[in-house]
Image (cartoon, rainbow, N blue to C red; front, top):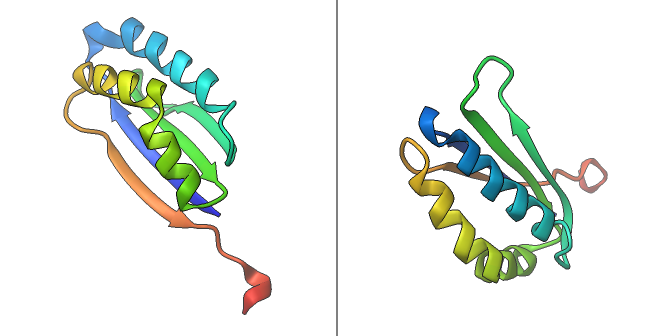
Length: 99
């Protein structure tokens, strides 16, 4: 399994628009095949810092997500409302039994 953390710093005057788009992205992504978990979080000490914590079965599921209609439509709009590009990090779920 693969995990992605995508951090967004939203411009203060764009918060409501960003949250509306994030809500749509969240609800549509939860229905995707290969999605294990898709959680939208707000940083506790900041009004404008958010992150998606994603868990996917495999790379193919991530590729399909990244090509989906809602992702290709919503992410560019969300980025326009942010101070710079999102910071995206990818991890593999560690399997302790494989040691």
